[in-house]
Length: 459
Ligand code: ADQ
Image 1 (cartoon, rainbow, N blue to C red):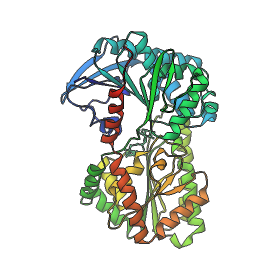
Image 2: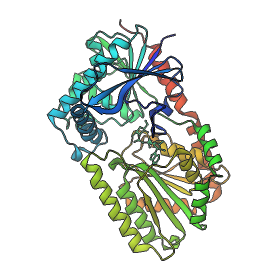
Image 3: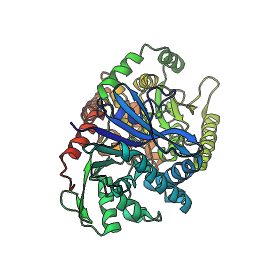
Image 4: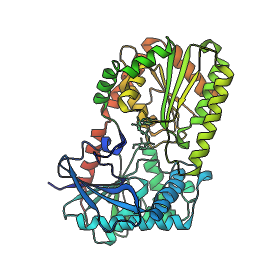
């Protein structure tokens, strides 16, 4: 059997303190069978980027990590990945901060990844690269003579050509990515955008099976939406009912309905718009005053990018405005916290919530939507208010689908959720749970890898 080699920007070792619960390690658990290799950045900044990978073995898996120099970290990760590609791929061209130097740093680190990975590869390895930080890695590996099967999965959206070309050198990135054998997307819309972009960058003509040939190499594409371990998450949520945190939250609510939001503090997640919509709800539907509480948990993230600091200030101000305008001496409508909460606590909180607000302005998938559905008590389920711009909306059509830019419409959806009869809540939840249980983390890995293994390679 061939070995699986996973490559991602960041590798979190199981031994690492504060290793992000959730994240790629959970999603790929199914794929990482004993013997697999996981290669990427250690998360450490050093005086120089490592010349060779550091190898560690844990639980039958091999972890190969490299450190990045401060300059490489700044240019590749902070500058180009988070300052240019992230806003671009979320359609926020106005936030794009392109610097030629960062772009060159990005290419350099992708080359370094290829250099350090190459000596670890065996001829029959299957390579699976993850996400937008490593768009040029497929070609960097090919230039070093790597003929293995290479798959690439993009966790974030892909934009249409008119948006893509706002980024200088975008065509270089698309051409380098096309050196993979298989490219996977979260949604059909993302794949279509990519194929149109590939046509505009390389003049290729996609075939009916959504593959194309460039320079004699066939690139196939697939749509494999990511999911969660739904049954496991349901169990976690059920168990969490007995936890001290859950009990404290229940007590603090004194019978009020809980509305919940759980996000990274990121401008793609639509948090200012969400706060505005909540303000509209309180303003236009005074019957809910004192009867509801919005708990927004927003884990701080990417604090070394300026835009994230200004977002935080904006949210502090909006939260203050709402609470100043509507609070009573014994009621605070909005509870806003900017830290991470552990997964089982969050699972318990989801289960208590009457409504979840998942209202990103753009999102590859959004796993919070799926976690919320899995966490519900099927006998008395809560309602999901979901942005049409989350990848999850392509599948989760029984949610209350909203345009997050329309504060009044989001307020109306919250109201609809708060007054929705039990029968309708159950019918929607049953349909949604069926989908969340069908498209899981395990099916994501299985489907993508089955497609990759089936590809005939030119080597
Ligand atoms: P993210 O943008 O990080 O991921 P998401 O899919 O919502 O977004 O996943 C976040 C994970 O972190 C979830 O498991 C969630 O429970 C957890 N999380 C979020 N906020 C938290 C908080 N405040 N405290 C604790 N835990 C929190 C990227 C893409 C997504 C895509 C995923 C996977 O942007 O669109 O769904 O990758 O492909």
